[in-house]
Amino acid sequence: MEQGMEQGIEQGMAKGMAKGRKEEKMDMARKLKSMGILSVGQIAEATGLSVEEIEKLGV
Image (tube, rainbow, N blue to C red; front, top):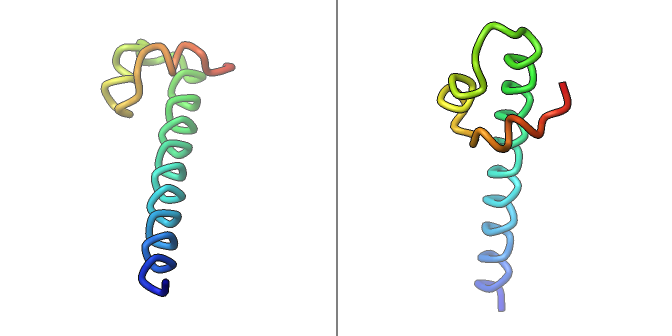
């Protein structure tokens, strides 16, 4: 049971960290998009996000 709890905690932490990284990428893409210097494709390449995700950002 203890091992199961440890696995659950580790999985929860991994999911939380992945979500935080995704949010950070979205924030960066939003800032880059608002600056209007780079194309959506360039922002996608720089952040690792898809073009569709970037186009959906409210800027």
